[in-house]
Image: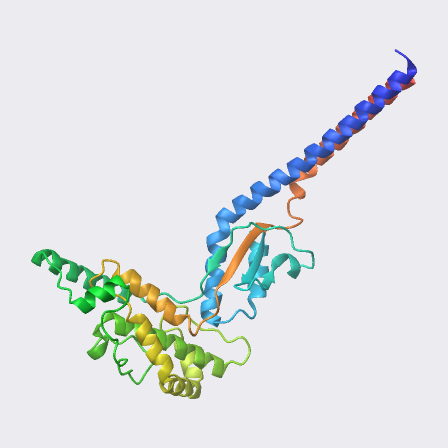
Length: 322
């Protein structure tokens, strides 16, 4: 074999080995990054969504959510990006760490930061629906007036909601269960009013990033109420005076039919729709691989590849020298 051919083969072997090692390391990096990001996303997705949703419920605003995103990203080793409905970036964990934002999954998780209907109200609504259904099954017929049939076909309440129930003196106390508030729809109405009153109270008492003490009714802790009695009175008066809003909320929670098997779920959705008038706007959460976190796992493959390339080069050089 001629010396020229030996040199050609040596260069070919070294170049091919270098290209193969580079390609293998690149594919390995990509594969491991995707695998680890998917595993972390599946493990922590619920935690991330619920934490951010809880922040939105307790603050009714997204100011300060970047701190929560940074903490979640550090704890879960994921890239987290939050976008408003108009695609404005509210927080990006990569940007918060001082680097360009990396890729994220195209399918986001939508978060509606509204409180849930109290379980006791939901249970009462379910019991009422079951009782109506049993009565229909016992009689074998369902009495529908023409107005009711027309309203059902249009998916609207068949009766006018009328005037809202008269609210009790304490809007931040336990949900009332007597008088007009024996009906689940009236109790759901009171819970929406209570949520807005609690938000108005903390915004009066705390000027910087106010937050509810609880994410469920009654939303304020006893300590929060005791610390700001003047704000409690001011918030109560403010909510009571907003007649148009009260009528709008009453109309929204009055949408569902009590004889519907899904009355409890319907009332829960109507409650959240009414609560959205005083809560934060929905957001979209995107998750991806955190930049710079997947290289550690490739140190051994990188060292092995470099060593193999060095051995090949050494053997080739020895061959040429001989």
